[in-house]
Amino acid sequence: MKTDSSRKAFELAQDVIPGGVDSPVRAFKSVGGTPIFIEKGEGAYLFDIDGNRYVDFVQSWGPLIFGHCDKTIETAVMDAVTRGLSFGAPTEVETQLANKICNMFESIDKIRFVSSGTEAVMSAIRLARGFTCRDDIVKFEGCYHGHSDSLLVQAGSGAVTFGTPSSPGVPADFTKHTLLAKYNDIESVKKCFENSKDIACIILEPIAGNMGLVPADEKFLQDLRSLCDEHGTLLIFDEVMSGFRASLKGAQGITKVVPDMVTFGKVIGGGMPVGAFGGRLEIMDKLSPDGPVYQAGTLSGNPVAMHAGMASLDKITEDKELYARFESKAQKLVNGFKEAANENGIALQVDVRGSMFGFFFNDNEVKNFDDALKSDTDRFAKFHQGMLNEGFYFACSQFETGFICDAMSESMIDDCIEAAKKVLSDIK
Ligand SMILES: *Cc1c(COP(=O)(O)O)cnc(C)c1O
Image (tube, rainbow, N blue to C red; front, side):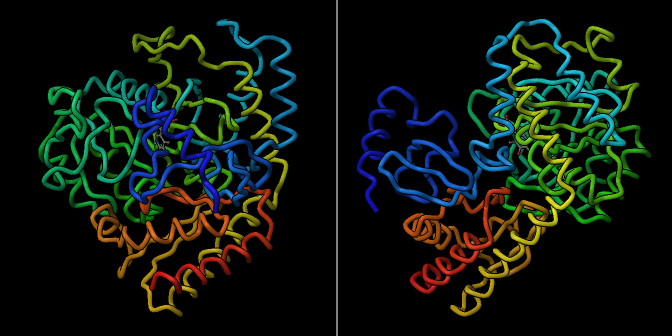
């Protein structure tokens, strides 16, 4: 595979952009090699600047549920562009998109649009704190909620310690209100409540996608709901990734548990920068300008982005078979991987939720971040490189989720399984 142009482009980028990338996950750090520079996308395919073509299982890290250059979304965007890029004043499409979402989710009476998932979660946390008049929050090891200060906390000495920041530049003072618990482990959450009477909210990815794909157990979610009710704490589902991906209603289409607040991003913008947070009326009423909790954005609810999101969600809701198709393709893919791994004596854990799929090179089932960290990342790096050479583009880390888009055909899945057989036998 020829990658000279990408190599050259990466060198030039590194001269003027830190690490040559505008988001660190793009840098191929954990798999080696240089990132592929993209020329264009087309349906399920990515084309790099050397002329190589890949089946894209990243789909911009989730947003592109119909694949690249979907005609419906493209037309909606083009149309909106001719009327103006931004006004900083209300447009009707914001209300339309808000109605669409409020009607879909039992948990959401009102919603506010922002420009990224990070912003959505950061604002939701502020609102939860403002609503409850409490400072502490509980987050789980391995769950990612964007890069805002109080959420950028890693597992220090394990569960139930007050968080230490995982990045220089985040004052410890800012993260001392972030309590860490272990995913799928209710005892660790109970300990947080023993340590603090001041917990405003528990935030989690109800289907975790940022430590690889690790869904929460139904019982765990129910127990979180009970604990929150008992302590007057808000339960926030961060569905920035799982929303409109794991099912039409994301994790909320799968679990019976109803959260107090929800955050969205990725698919909700159809490929444009959009985030959103919503919840019960009494909570959302505390938000500025109705209430005292301040939050704002010059480009929030941007009309072009709103039209992209609207077109995307309309198309999603019109197609009643969409998620069944996703799930069957995703299941076929990981079953194929699993079989290929078995044939080569390689331990592989696989899982699927709608259009999201995950695979860990791991001897045991993965229920939390500690389990995920026991995966064989060297083998993953080799698998990643091998699959790239075969024309299949996967996220460049063992701890990411794969995405099916509707433009992916059965034969692409078949070809991908064949390629995996070859690659796994080369790296066994
Ligand atoms: C991607 C992601 C975010 C952050 O969204 P950005 O748009 O990258 O800021 C937050 N939470 C979850 C669960 C995500 O997957």
